[in-house]
Structures are given as C-alpha cells and as structure tokens.
Image 1 (cartoon, rainbow, N blue to C red):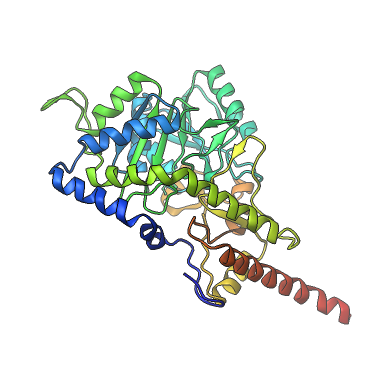
Image 2: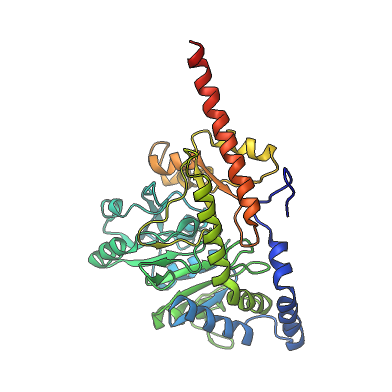
Length: 384
Ligand SMILES: Cc1ncc(COP(=O)(O)O)c(C=O)c1O
C-alpha cells in the first residue's frame, strides 16, 4: 500500500494474504477439522506436489531451511573432520549448518555479476578432506551449476544446493532443487514460497538420501519408537503444509509478476548509471530480492527512506567477517568480491502485489538520489 510520497514496504505479506484469503482460511479450517497437526496427509500431499514442481522424485518436508541444510549434510555423510566448500556472501545458515555436523566450512569468493559462487575458484579449495560443495542460489538466481557439477564429479564430491531463495528458478531450463544431489529450501514467510511460520524441505532424486533425511527428521525412527539413527524433531506442521499447498498453486503466476516488475525496474533505471541485477545467460531468475549495487549505498538507502521507501541489505557483513565465525581464520581482504558486494548492495521493494506505479515511484526516487549525487560531485569541479 502506498500513496505518492507515501510508504512502500520492502515486502507486504498482508497484501498477499488478502489476495488468497478464502483459500487459506479454508485450508486452515481443514487442518483444524482433521485433528492432525504434525506431518499427516497435508504434509504428504505437499511433499508430492513440491517434488513434482522441482522435477525430483522426493521431497521431505521439514520445520526450516536450516534443518534442511543440516539433514542434507548428514544424509550425504558429511561429518567431523570433513570440509564443505561454500561462499561467504550468503545468509549465515549456509555456513552454520556445515558446523552443525562438525565439518569445516571452506569459503570461496563469489562471481560479482551473479553474486553466486565463482566456479573457477572451487578447485583450488579442494583438499583430501573435501566432501561436498554447497552452492547458494542467492537472490533467486541459480549458481552456474555445470562447472560445479563437473568439478564435483571429478573429485567424487556431493553437491548440495542451497535453494532457500530460489523456488522455481531454472538453470538451463532445469528447476533448481533437482540439479545437485540434494537441495535445501526455506519456506520462511518472506520467501517466494512462504509458510505462515517456520518451514523448509529437502528435495532429491536419490532414494537412499531421501530415506535418511526422512528418518532423521523424525527422531531417526524406521517405525514407531524404534530408533535406528540419532535423529531430530524437524517435522513440518500440518498447518504449514496446507498453507504451502495453496500458495504453490499461485507460485508460477507470482514468479512471472516478480520477473515483470524486475524488468520494469531495469527499464526505468536503464539510464541511471546504477548497476542493476543481471540475469545470467543460464538463468531463470525468480527475483526473491531485486538488488542494486551502488558505491554510496548508505546514502541511497537514506535518500529512499526519506521518501518513505523501505529497502534491505542482503547482507551487510559476509560470514567470514562475522564475530561468530572469526575462528574460521579468514580476515578482511580474504574475499574481495564478497566484501565489495556487502558494502554496495541494496534491495528495493519487490513482491507480486507491488503495483507498477509503486515500481515507477521507487525507480524515480533512485534516479533522483543518484542524479543528486552526481550533481554534488560535479559542481565543485565546475567552480574550480
Ligand atoms: C540462503 C539461505 N540459506 C538458508 C536459509 C535458512 O532458512 P530458514 O530461515 O528457513 O532456516 C535462508 C533463510 O533465510 C537463506 O536465505
């Protein structure tokens, strides 16, 4: 909701609910009537529908994307003393999950055009202890998977996609979620496919991995009260599955709208001199966020805030510079591309219910702020 010079949020989940209220309310009522609140038929149906959507044979519904990463790593046999290669420019969960299984995160820099892992940097990071590569499809754009899979196959490594931000994205025509050996999704409320609480899933077409993840999410049981693995309570709630089933029916339409709004932003800011997100040749980008790069990012953010336009920074500090991960042993300067991105990125409002008028208002405000910046730089020179 906005007025001219009004308030444009980064995300508007209430507007989305209003558009699907009848379907959601009926789905919630159905769960209440069923008396089944954890796992159950809603979860089983969601698993089948989401596996079909991801072009995999298996989906295991969980209680978060972080749990998905944790269980995917365990199922892949990653453990103490192993190394897993991923990026520092991601949400902290991608790296944290590696430490949950006792393995060491080995970080490599990103490619600045795609904001995803630089495939050329992977091989140099491989050691005798490397077990897996964990590419992150950041912002809704798939990582360049072919060279990643090629190096993984050559070295006998498992590939685990972090697809938490990329529901429905495609790499060379194939859906993410089915490209690596396993993939991890988050259905946190603000995600392109978001629950009304915490939720996540693993997708895979490997039956053995699927069986392990399925057991681990429910206390490692193969049947009731018989524990063959040391498992967890990572089960999905029936409410979340019912909500996700409703939303999955709308996801393609929402994604097309996101893509159209992103294209409109691109057009409107074409002459702004600002660096707009690039859809790589291999990608169907699903624009979980629409992220610009700007040298004076903080100035631009403040100028937009003054116009009532809310923005986000995904992410202001790469994981290797987070205090909690200082013991990984990487200092400032270790990953120049990730560090530069963290200083320069700014995400603009983007969600399917955002109106084209709002997009025009945001783009105009960005141009005004950047033009003003140019003038303030140019003027003193004119006076010289
Ligand atoms: C790239 C990435 N990986 C993992 C996660 C973790 O997902 P969750 O918050 O559902 O645990 C997120 C969530 O924000 C994410 O963005």
